[in-house]
Image (tube, rainbow, N blue to C red; front, side):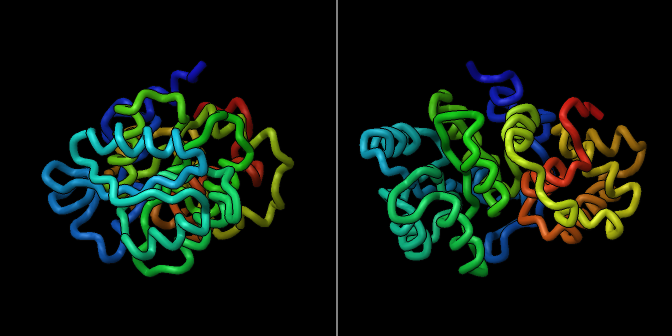
Length: 263
């Protein structure tokens, strides 16, 4: 059964759902425009180019056919393992890679890490997995993936997740992420240099971990949206986080955010 936060995160627009964060990151260098503006992949009139990486041929071909039929998505290639995913992504330069994590030769975690480290204009990565509590997913998020979706989700929801990530946002599922992270041993306290974060930045990070969007955080603190964006940017920079989701993983693993925290 899919948890309600998972369904909500990929069925609503980025600005409408608490589970989908907004204004989390700057646009990728080399990508026209900024999130939510014309010329950005995932916005009307600008199709998202997509590479699908999955070692199961039936799954891969099925996703290719079904996602290519969705408006605003152009599937530019397929990869049967992590090595092919890296090679194809560097050759085809897609906006998004839909990345399975358990693949031969090179798994999706290492493939994600190589893609994000080996290019000045890397694609966004959305992990696709069978199980909500897959420990590989947490590692992939720590490597810089922008979010994850379940293979059993309806194709329109997977397509929406691809569009959201392409537009510069991060897919965040607080309950599922909390379940995955807390199932593993906590990381070193050094993962979160608390001395480097101001008190307000820690508060912002805690609210990010509950799935609140930037506008909702601004309303909670009664400050401007630009102020919140500044705080979020500072948090990502100080933590060395690839994106908003990665910052939340660090928050859970370091113990700053604990199971049961609701804001």
